[in-house]
Image 1 (cartoon, rainbow, N blue to C red):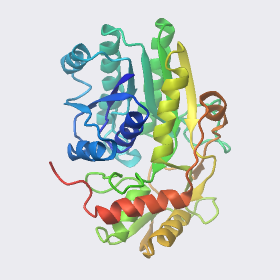
Image 2 (cartoon, rainbow, N blue to C red):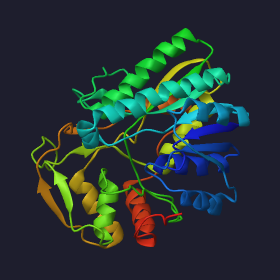
Image 3 (cartoon, rainbow, N blue to C red):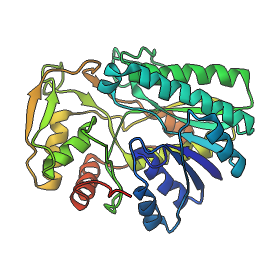
Length: 338
């Protein structure tokens, strides 16, 4: 299977490409390098023995996409490309709607012109907003409360309508929770450009000496220790979920929706403690005010994915923190520049 992977040099996309190659699939990567580096390609090749085909360009550029589809016999698309930080989206909503919503619509137009009918879309648990209860099932109402979540929800709603109008299409929406961890080789991991927006890379950068301390945003939530609780899932489990979606739903016309998570919640301070245990490094932190758009707690009910995709997360919190530390300690400054 030849799969176009948008955002394929990013954190989740690159790990998914490794898993795809090892499963006998052929990823064709499109990335604009906004939050990634071309040196990731060499790491993929080192781990798999295969150098993926790569096109640098933006999914908002229809001519660029048409050319990629014209040059390659593509069977399906895994769509990762997009902006992804909640707090950044509050400050720059226009950029989020332009990249995440408009970019997806341009991509679907190019797919239809090339008669490619299968898409797996990288959605997010943020589409649920602040759920009334946990764990969260796919039947929960969607009510995103920040521009990032609304951009993902808007894309979902667009794809629902598009699939109804084109019933031959197979569209799978993967609502995943909080990706963490790294490849156990230490060759690949999360390398955000600038100040990290997510918890684990910030913790690891503090531990390796790149940051002075971790800011813990809010310690007065109604949770086990007052800090926010999330469902953290290892990036390789997440990558395997995309392969499962292609294998089990890629040839089945219709709209398919799945949560990808572990079904367990951990607080910020519990993650700090677990990381310190795995690394042997005490992580300095300070309590800061809550961030706009954040919620108290959220974790998944992943039962539907287990039943229908025959997928479940298997890697533990120790795997997540140990693999993260191996990546960061081996690559204290992240990926080298090209």
